[in-house]
Image (tube, rainbow over all chains, first blue to last red; front, side):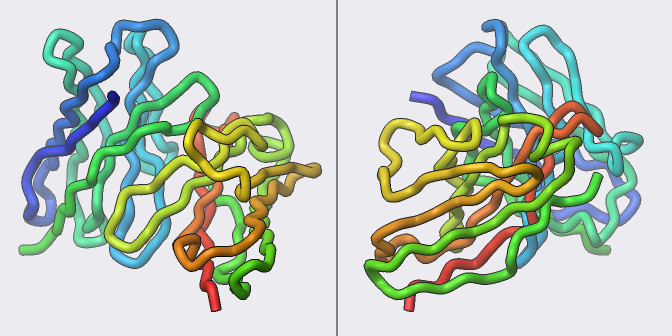
Length: 119
Length: 111
């Protein structure tokens, strides 16, 4: 059974750096073809894809946010970490991590964590 | 990259069928058979309903089906049930980021 869970601060101040951790079980991020992605959803708005890391450490980022995002993995801990710099109130959203299968879809999602950006 | 275009809302009565469209470009929907559909109930995480245009994951009702023509993909739900009332999002692989882009979402109301 695949499970994922996001953790991190619920409140950050403008200009600060957000660090979120995705802890997963039921699969290995060292298995060929596997990936873990991050997707966010502002309150009442649509899903927005942010970043993806593959089993081979290849990384992909949203073109519009690439300069602010960094995704890393710790295979031994079954964790993926997303950092986003220079946070702004418009970055207030529920942040999800999800397991990516080979056909570019996300089969299993974490419960999400709401991050509010406010001074 | 621009989001895929979906209607903001659709509605139908129990037992009826509805179709939700998802329009992109040749760089995403039209260029690859990697269109997925997600269902999201309020306060819940999205759930994968369709992948690779028309494939259903194990456990998803066969009332849900997907198709694609040109740059537009479609999700059809037949035999509408009250529990189908939710937001639906399409996504597609896109060559612009070599990952995925989501649609703006469609709110399905079961009358």
